[in-house]
Image 1 (tube, helix red, strand yellow):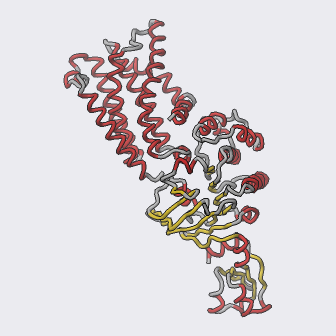
Image 2 (cartoon, helix red, strand yellow):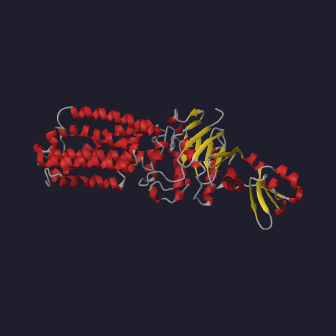
Image 3 (cartoon, chains in turn cyan, yellow):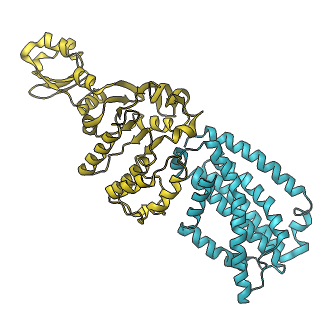
Length: 210
Length: 284
């Protein structure tokens, strides 16, 4: 686990595209999601960062050309998939620290008032990230990359539209009205989906020709 | 453990190609060359051994153990070199080394640094800035730095200059001085194998043509030259492959004694190279 985590973190901080994403995505979200409640912006940033970095790492190792190297190293396919699923929580904590520092600086400069840490939103982000990855990860194993990309885009854009809707309309928004963020329903759904997705992905990857 | 690598009745079906129940074995302390034309099934076989492809049927044992059941343990003892670079291009040699090293239980930094020096590789260079030959050198340095007992290589010498190719062959030869280690490598450059291989496995169109010791192969095949008047329906059948020109023919045979008996001193018999064997067998 530590070896694969070390690999992912080295890659995250050396890939130019990932670095550009990490630097410019926060200002982009601040610009797009004009929320009267800073907590929704915080949620959008935490979910987007964790989801994108987890997916990027998953895609690189499962479907990118480096899959040959990873699968030739002393590690079973089951472990590779398991670590990818566990690593979303690691990415979540890395994101909390990175985003916290980034937003704190924005706050300190007075450019915009933003939440740089919000426990309520951080806890709400976890089931959302789990649900997104639980749907998208196995689709990369089940379908050809083009179709999996479409599924990813649909999910990500839906989230984005939901966040813009929530940010601009608050309690009158569609998201609030259907009550997605209320109670423990979402967490329970996320846990069931996450476990089912993990088992399906392990089985699919076991049989996959690389 | 009698064999370091055992492949039995291995089958893999694709839409337009089938690896057809192939079998061969490699003993510890030897080098086996895996030859065949493009698309014959060499890379497919190597990917199956490394569990990058899933077999339809058959058995693969490495170090006497099933290659999937004991995958982690087996891969810890395998050094691999592939025909192209699959390492992360944006990383430097040192960064990539640091990633790979964490996976192996017997990684040896001193050995890796030794090979970097030998191959004139700068640890601070990014992998994407390396030439094809340099990338191959880097792969080789990684494969040789964790005390692997089996080195598996897919076309390791293609694209390399003759000086470095010879250097690689010398290194491989040094490795198998340890009689517990073996090397299995596919190549198009059959002259490399003539220098160092102990066994040759020849695959064509998904089927094994032969898997024998190099000496046995060199003794059983020959190039025969003679006049066109010697060829008729019966004698043609004694050749695996035949090339006819204006002034005579040249063919590959594995029935040297039979042809000597039939033609006596009307024919010229020469030693066949591995390339001759491969080309005539494929072309017919």
